[in-house]
Length: 141
Image (tube, rainbow, N blue to C red; front, side, top):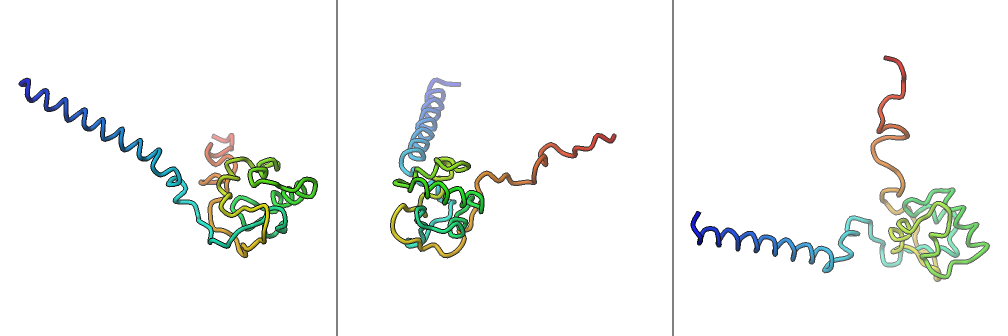
């Protein structure tokens, strides 16, 4: 290979590496909310006040079933929420769930969400129930 061909190949490789670095930087810094683009987005007035919503209204949120809704109500009766992030203090609700639900959550004002929000329920694994990933449990040959 000639010196010019080698230099040309080397500069192409550097340019490709630089392009990849720029792409990754843009992906990480330019659009931090882009990762949430697949998540259902609320209507501007479709919100739930976690301090006043009924247990039934709380079940409209993805990942909040009857038992979690009852725990939210029991928690706020002892200590009303001052900030949405405090919802993570309720047993069975973590920060990941709070982040996912944050667009719909409020600690003041009216509850205006009137129906279930479509979406995947956090904590539920796709592809079967208990033990499905391990195959049959029978000891028979």
